[in-house]
Image (tube, rainbow, N blue to C red; front, side):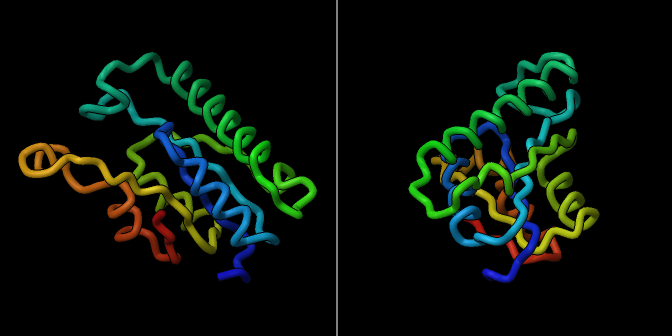
Length: 149
């Protein structure tokens, strides 16, 4: 795993995604890391709480959230890496995360994906209604190795 040169860490603005970025920075010390802020399209059902602003506003907010995530991780990292922020590039992409992440990984030559998979309490009807988790979809659709935290 440590020989990966380009690692993708998707962010959807959910709690604990900082763990995925911190893991990528520590596990792949020589890799370039892309923090991909996925912006859910307006026509997606139940996206981002169901209340969506215009696309440009959401893209700006997603990028700002990714920048805050990067800042919080680099501030709290007790690493020997002198400037982990220099290895991280922030990108945004609009689309359903289960589609956007594998597509980005394929098109940009990503070697490894690190994603935080939430362990929500949704079971039964709610789980069937909402569908599979994003992390499971990314694992299924990505041709490169995926680490789910």
